Length: 239
Image (cartoon, rainbow, N blue to C red; front, side):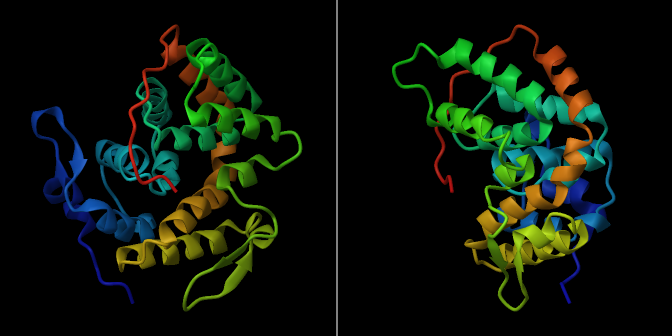
């Protein structure tokens, strides 16, 4: 049985909001510990948004559950920030979410990035990654593209069962359970499960995100307006 974490104290003890800076004080391992039992977290919208922000933009960790728990305006703000202030790490979340939001969002983002980088001799590597993924959308399930796996990918958790991705696509409850197990392994110090947890996050919640695609796409496009993507900030630790 997992050890208990006092979720009600998250906002008061584990988040630093001083001087306008918002960060999760207990670090990435404990973030994964909380995500392992995310369904029990009951916090204000502002606190859930901080968990979403830290998961997506700071830890490059599974975070889609928080997005689905929030009103649209918070998710639009997060996606807008990912677009306006890209790093070579968290921009991959924007690309993967883009696969789930569909062709309209991807065509908009592609045009924005073309305006920014098409004439560059060496545009960021994710610019080409995104182009390649968009070209595959008509032939490959967007959830699989976002998850970075294939239908035949074997997903194994130490001490648990081995599942094939095909069997998880239509069984979000089982996928969510395996995702929680992967997060617990990260919390316990096995960083090899970080990538598995991220991929399972998209497999688990991809369909739910797709249901919000039309509204999110329209809102993000309206919110961004004529603003261009910022220059890329280089960060390490990309898997």
